[in-house]
Image: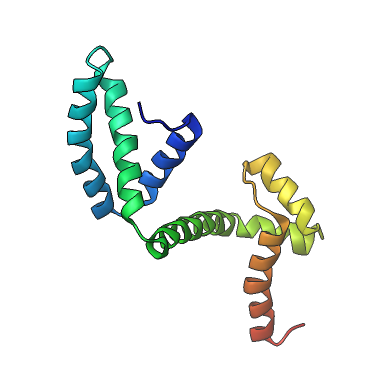
Length: 146
C-alpha cells in the first residue's frame, strides 16, 4: 500500500517522533484524507493497518515538502538530545567515576566496562574522557593544582 519497504516505513515513523509539534499536527491532518482514500481502494483490509499505512504515506508527503536545511536541523536536534541524555546519566554516576579514576586508578576503558556491567550504562571511553577533561581539568585549574 505504501510502496515503501518495512525499513523505510520504520525510518519515517522515527522521523515522525523527532519533528516538532506543528509538523506532527500537519502530518496528522493529512493522514485523515489519505486514510479514507486507502479505505475506498482497500475496503477488505483492517482499519488499523490502513491507519498505519496512511500515517506513513502522510509522513512521507510532508517530509518531501520540508527543505533540506530544516530536515538536517531536525536530525541535529535529535542527536544533541541523545548526547545530552548520556551526559546526564554519566553525571549521575560521577561520584563513582571519580572514585574509580582517582582512588582505584582505573583507565577510562575500564571505567566504561564497570559502568556497563554494574549500572547498565553504555558509553564510549572517549565520551567519558571528554567529560572528565571538561569537568575535572577545569576543577584542577581553578584550585591551582596540576
